Amino acid sequence: MKQFFSHYKSYHLSLLLLAGPMILSNISVPLLGLVDTAVIGHMSSAHYLAGIALGASSISVLFWLASFLRMSTTGVIAQAFGSKDSKKLTFLLQSSLVLALGFSLIIILIQPILLSAIEYLSGAKAQVVAQAHLYFSVRIYSAPAAVCNLVLLGFMLGMHYGKGPFYLVLVTNLINIVLDIWFVVGLEWGVTGAAWASLIADYCALAFALYMVKRLFIVNQITWVWHAPKSTEISKLLTLNRDIFLRSLLLQLCFSFMTFYGARLGELTLAANAVLLNFLMLVSFALDGIAYAAEAKVGHAKGQQDKRKVQLWVNLSLFWGGAFALLYTLIFAAFGNEIITLLTDIPEVISHAQSYLPWLIALPIIAMGCFLFDGVFVGLTRAKEMRNSMLLSTTFGFFLPLLLATAWQNHGLWFAMTCFMALRGISLFYRYRQLCRQGTLLQ
Image (cartoon, rainbow, N blue to C red):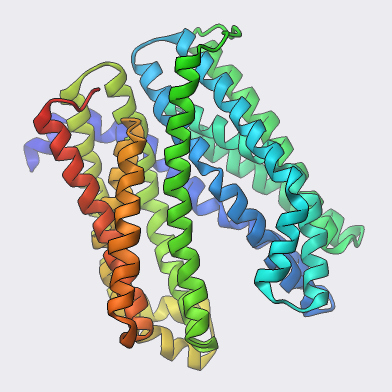
């Protein structure tokens, strides 16, 4: 163990310096929704708060689905950066931005359908739906900025500029806070003001992200030249994005099912699960940070066609991912009850949530593999394996265990989520070992 640290000290440091800002930016992300909620929460009626919660969560789901563009961009850019192919690097960035704009345009064009779906699926009261529509109808036009920001974030990460995403989130949040207070409290624009604040913050963040990317081009002596796309390269990029999108869609299906199935088990169960899912969000802060670093490092090593380095970065990522997962498990075991009471002060919800706490204590260790190997396979740009693993895990890791454990009620639901996380990690690890044995890791 001592040799593992001393011999690879610079590698450990390099990984953590890249992961650290990503962890901080992950922690900062929930602040954007929190600011809107806090400001609106002080208005005269509860339907304002319920409306913004419904509208903001709907926007979040749409933009989260667009995260496939961030992942694919990180992988291909890291490989181009590793191979020192500046021509390919600029082409990939240009193509990814075009795809982002196309995805954004589709979202804006189908806005009426989305609004109808929100009203139908939520079953909320007319006043709440009206406020949600006000928020959504403004905020949807931030899609081009928000989705392009995902691509630019992926570019910065692929170029090993881990501080960039942190700066980007910081700027977005600061602008959003100032504008929220001005529009909602000062000008009394209500929910529409909160939506405009977030929209302007997204476009300001886009301008700042473009500035940081321009600086990266200058520092790395890369010339921005428009490259006519080749049909084969476009086809590969579209296939990569398609497979990651399908993987993301299946992941969202499972988490959405957690909410809807929990609602069928009763209001108390739904509230308890909402509290407990925050534990999983806390876990993702650190493990996603390590996974993002793995994407960049593994992709860079593949671009260099250096199998030894790929395996080294995988091992280092697993070590630090395991260390953080163990830390989370210990914290949840020692302070899980206290965390629950911080999240809610309703006695019935606290008692109900505490009965499911053992699942959350075990989950960081069990889920660590799926977080880390997602990052590894993004870096390898092997999206087909990610898609197949997610399909396998959704079918046999989530819905089949849930069907078999229906009698366990909410324990059955958390059992299914645990199996889902475990099978994702196991299947991707198995495929990684298979690629190493076959000598096809760098293909």
